[in-house]
Image 1 (tube, rainbow, N blue to C red):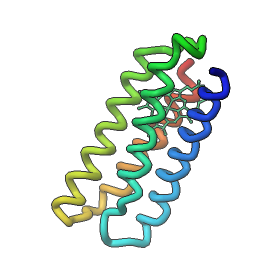
Image 2: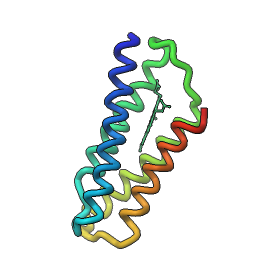
Image 3: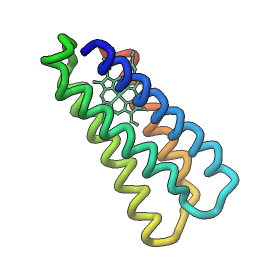
Length: 112
Ligand code: HEM
């Protein structure tokens, strides 16, 4: 089971990489990138899988922290879906999405 947890952490970190990469691509692109949705989707699936498998992997997580990370991710996803549908990309969107990603990395690392 430890291997499954490590595999999910591996994919979770790659998902973070997708979001950071998307931020960099977005700086040069006028349209809202699909990368936000791909990265956020991967974080959602792997994060929830890590959380729900905790009894089997003997992991102990801070559920308040995970709940806040989930809310931040919902905001990222909501903004990405909303502005993709509207076909507009206001100036504040890219720094806001990037800032929310960094916020979740900070919560993951500094809040034990
Ligand atoms: C933008 C979204 C997210 C980012 C950037 C992110 C980032 C990270 C990072 C960097 C770690 C590694 C921390 C460390 O090992 O010290 C981590 C761990 C973790 N994240 Fe996330 N996360 C996100 C969303 C979520 C969500 C929505 C959930 C679940 C509700 C979640 C659940 C977890 C869990 C359970 C771990 C611990 C894995 C382990 O070490 O066993 N994450 N996250």
